[in-house]
Length: 290
Image 1 (cartoon, rainbow, N blue to C red):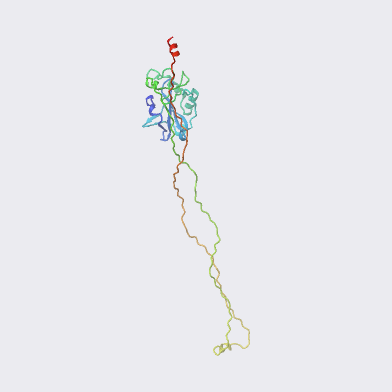
Image 2: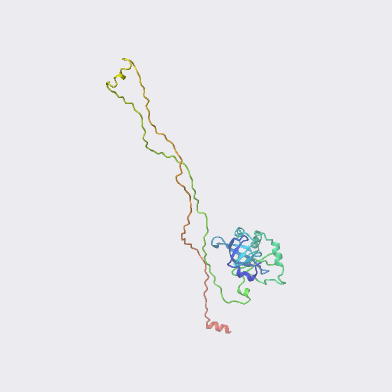
């Protein structure tokens, strides 16, 4: 359990779940009205800490410079949104909703609040509150109530006349997300190709030669008058098409990271402190003497 003395080590420090996942940063710590013990811590979650979720602090522990709570990150981020009034209080209804969400028995909370701490109440009359900036969800009587702020005088025992000025700071981070998908797809197309090849064919050519002494015997070797026939086979070449599959290249996809500068604008609030003086007139002095 976190003690009041450890609150300074909780505020504005990171909060982690039991699996080592960062949930956010602790913003406010809320005290119980009757026991004066830290009861809740609000954690800034979401992009740039835009949301604030409530987490029970009773079973939390400080580990080095961070607060660890026994609840999953998504469970904390999905906790019910509750309203804190102008005095920094949680109503009984709001606190009851949170106890139910985290599975904490409401009767056991009441029993713990009704027990004394070292023979006395940890908080006296009035309001106990939050270190840093906020109040707590408390229990007045037996059923609950409200808890408010605790200022520097409550925490230190002496009044501090100094006024604390605070301001918001913008912390810009980056998150990695999917921006698109790319894939390689192979498909088949058919193209018309053209190629010229030489082809040859045989043609008939009739040759005539006169009768000479050299061929006279062959010319007179047959009958004097007759019919005859002589056949010659002609040949020609034709194109023959055949295809062959051959590898031509290898294709793969790679990614490369490019860094661009992007300007992020946001609004932050700052507190200003101004001194006001009021002159005391003679009339005021005379009235004061009467």
